[in-house]
Length: 250
Image (cartoon, rainbow, N blue to C red):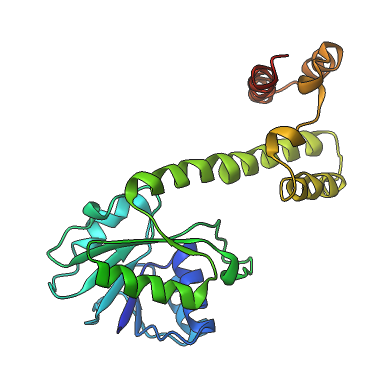
């Protein structure tokens, strides 16, 4: 398929890179941010444009969720396949008479971080079995982990990802605020973070829980609360400990 990627953010960048690494030709990368598009173009030798959307067989829309509907309306051809990369939007958000699909990579993407694309789960949905098979085969060139998934399942995959990734990373950021406030190098905590993640490769997360809340150690919990000076940190600390207690009936 003659392919165009629309977008210039983190996901578009990594999909362009994954396609390039796996010898999948991208004929154009299109969007509004000429600086980011030029960067992707130079890195992966893909023509770019901010003005003229090239004719293609397959358009892969990789923009923020709130822009997908508008961007999808730019595609005026009928006999083409159009997919978005969102985990939280249905295919029907795409506005056009073309064939609709979803091509969702389950990963957190940052342009400065290299990834092993072969390990990323891809979830495919399309209106027709022919298009679904085509996108499944395309994703399988990139990844060893490809499945079909309808929107009902995909939106719960995305919700779970927010808990498992976005919320956890936010706690890392809040933890760093505390360590910075006491001039404690955050590097102290990297081995602890690594071990926490490593354990759930081998154990159920619920069985891996440690800490004062799961032990019901009210003395330590009170000590920590007395140490916390920032209201937002205290709310998070109390909310998380209450959730842990409820899970383990402490």
